Image (cartoon, rainbow, N blue to C red; front, side, top):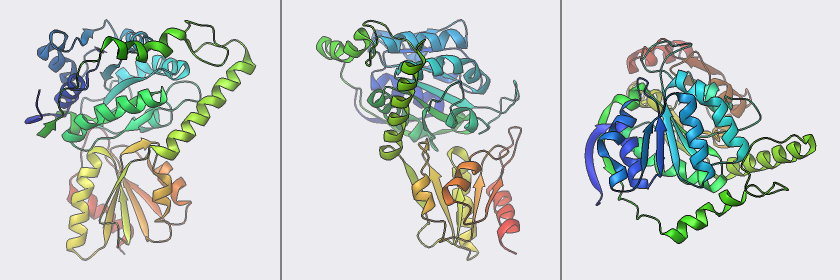
Length: 360
């Protein structure tokens, strides 16, 4: 299947990219605004071409546990949902992290709390980047800002997940999931040979290292001293990820006197804000974290003595701002602007908020 360009939604791009990556299985449950992921997979019927299993589970809880089971067999498996559905999956996600299983979770965020609204939001930052479920675990978290990145991040998330045997999340929102753009789809990966599959599954069939019994995949450990060693191993792995897997984008930051820090759809809006500011002679740059975890703290820290102020623009009440403040060590004023309830601000609105905050 050759590389080709198509016009599609962000959710559809996720589905096509998963098929072309050679994902072994998708297990999900419908919820707005991400239902097109499963619907597209059903329409494409990849079980007839690549062997990919596509199944609508009876609930979000069932879906994440199916992912757990598939991952325990060494398979490249995934699920998707939206905010309240992700809440239901958090126990299973924590179990996967504790069992050191790879897997991809896609969250197309909607407004909350509770059932909230089906309109876009970025209010799941705490839920995802801070771990979400119980225990000291981390999720590798990618934040696409375009439909193209929705497609590209599927392979990246799967590869990082298998590299570190840790679940990974694509943290999108209703804007990116529902908007349509041209996408360059990757070529179809070749189907794996039986020998490759056996090699991939070796670790799964033998269980975990460090005194684990063979053929047992679990996050349970009743011996506290062993559980502490497991957690110490996890933390060492997380540190390794922080050192090696940070991704960010800088736009007009070279001479910037002010920064806007934003991710996902908020970054798209903020890029236009930078243009508006530059047109008025105000030197504003955009710093976009692509990995929300690991957060690009070291790079952002380099601006702490260079800029006069930082505005975080998020579609929430202010969540990423905490990581921004930690990164710049309170050396520079950091303020937040965002809208709630599914309202997406215009670039002009954000620009006016920026000026009222920093330009006296």
